[in-house]
Amino acid sequence: MIEVSQLTKRYGENLALNNVSFKVNKGEILGFLGPNGAGKTTTMKILTCFMAPTSGGARVAGHDIFEESLDVRRNIGYLPENVPLYQDLGVRDYLDYCARLRGVPKDQREERIDDVIKKARIEEVENTIIRKCSKGYRQRVGIAQALVHNPPVVILDEPTIGLDPHQIIETRKLIKSLAKDHTVVLSSHILPEVSMTCERVIILNKGEIVAVDTPDNLTQKLQQSQKVQIQVRRAGEDATTKIQDIEGVTNVGTARTDRGAVTFTVESAMDKDVREDLASLAVGSGWGLLEMKQIELSLEQIFLQLTTTEEGVNN
Ligand SMILES: Nc1ncnc2c1ncn2[C@@H]1O[C@H](COP(=O)(O)OP(=O)(O)OP(=O)(O)O)[C@@H](O)[C@H]1O
Ligand SMILES: [Mg+2]
Image (cartoon, rainbow, N blue to C red; front, side, top):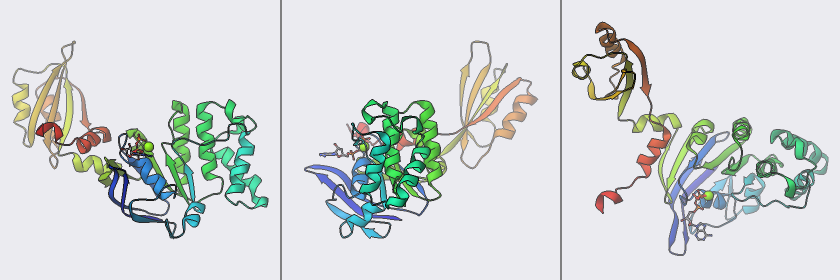
């Protein structure tokens, strides 16, 4: 549905995107993850024909961004980083204006507007003047306008920014529900957001793609060792040595809680599950097993690993 090949964008000397290529399949939700200045907004502006790349190209819904930019725009709903709303229009009137602008036929307009008002959950403010709406509601009106012409491709630049926690949950649900009928690209630098809503993640850093995968695979790929945490009520002096003697264990960390319980963080090779041996050791030695859990690397840690360059090492 979206094909991006070797996109490069320079702002003067500043290389904002460097040779970025990727594809998005029909019905997929793809997340762009990256720190400030990574090139997320730049990529989205190019896909929505708001800006031309310095080199490279892209096709959206079968149309070329240079040759058929009008067709591309017709097929896209776009929530920009800063939503340009007409402050003095009522919400419903604004959506009507957007629907006209995007060529929604007259006899379908009411139905489309009702539908997006419901989807974006802005029934409460449909007759309120935009200027008087709270920031969260304005953001949702922005999402509604992106959907009003029922476009096959929806591009959302930081869709949950400025929303309260409850609205964030609602918006994520809405985005997920779009996947059936739409292809969605969203950007975020909030990590749980992409892992919760997206099937695939592209991690961008300084204009380059540093990883593309499912949130789960990214976690696994980068996880070279696995960690298990085990808490016991009373551990013998030789506990650490005994744990270290378990086959496959590469490292053991110890932390004492104020009530005398001890937590061991046990690292082992990726392909070696030591949980069973650990449990039998703890029970067999009468340590009083309180808890055992596997620790997974969060996307956040991976993200840090991916985007931490060796600059610090060289300097
Ligand atoms: N209009 C512009 N003129 C000059 N440089 C720009 C312009 N827009 C963006 N840049 C630069 O391009 C790079 C990528 O910016 P972009 O806005 O795409 O990042 P982003 O990933 O969306 O970041 P954020 O998370 O802050 O929104 C940055 O270095 C930025 O300073
Ligand atoms: Mg941005």
